[in-house]
Structure formats: C-alpha cells, structure tokens
Length: 117
Image (tube, rainbow, N blue to C red; front, side, top):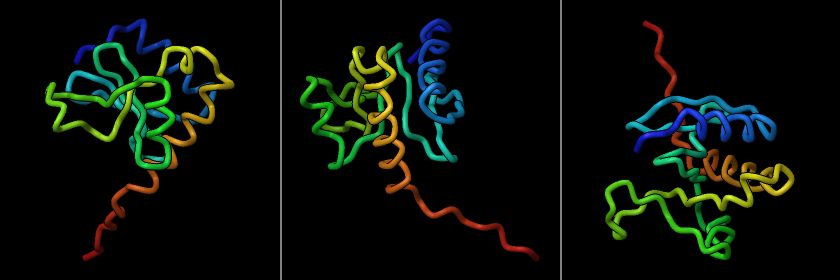
C-alpha cells in the first residue's frame, strides 16, 4: 500500500486548503485525521474517504468503489475512492471532505479518559 511522495504532497496540499488535517503513516499507507478522527486514507496512490449511508451514494453515483485492503469484496472497509475530478477542484472537494469528517465524528468511539490514581 505504498504512497509516492508526490501524491502524498499533492493530496495533503489539497486537503489542507479545505480543512485542518493531520496525517499518520499506517500499514504502508497514510491516514488523514481531523480533530483526532480518521476520515481519509491513501493506499497505492488512491485517496479514500470515510463513508456511511449518508454519503455512500455520492461515491456510487461517480462509479467509485470501496477500499479493499485484502482484495476481498466481501470485506470492504468503510472508505470509498475519491474521484480524481473531485480531488482536483477545491470547490467540489470541500463538501466531500466535510461529509467524510462528519461520518468520522458520527462513528467515532468515545474517548476514554485516563483515571487519576
């Protein structure tokens, strides 16, 4: 799931023009976070956004499919590939990013607080 430096820089630049994001390498790819919640990832120089029933149709309407890290269509992750045309156009990208961030927030596990002794 390698990520080329050029694609990584391009995607990071595009996303940072739309929202505050941080990154962390994971499993050979790169994961993007907003407010500590994963909402996007890059694998093999393809960008994927987090989906649920609220935004999945946006991806399907563009003919995009799910992230299949193990190649098994029976085990997709809750991320779909972002169309290249969306990534290239900041005005079009903005609502896709915000929807993915909303999905990530909606499905986030509650954070545990460390108990003081």
